[in-house]
Length: 170
Image (cartoon, rainbow, N blue to C red; front, top):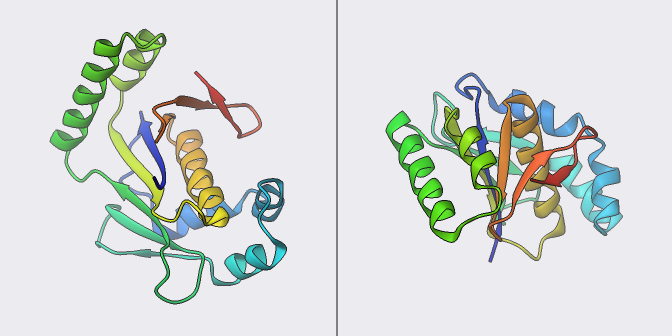
């Protein structure tokens, strides 16, 4: 299973440019966060040297790729749902699943999702790549913090952003 964060945002992401996202992600001390995760210094240095974001589906924010490794190696994908109908369908499906499982935080999650205007995924298909994990999480944290979002991880856990920019369980 890859690294996967879904961010449910109450504020629109329509004006987020690749440059905005890159600035947001690099505003944190990426090197320190990566070291804390056990990323080797050589990997951190390489990632910071090649770090860039490209818009793969211009003109707006639909699919951005965050490059942190050279060449054709797998990178971090940041994908925003294109239509409001798609956003609503994702939210409705999520709420249906949470209700069916009797999720303990259903009411809190539902209250948030009912106000969402955008849904975005930050993911990497390379779970064994520690820098990809760090960057995908930093993308999710920046988007959640800036656009009033909550985060669902691939293991179906729900998170909010803490006061220090860290993930805290709902």
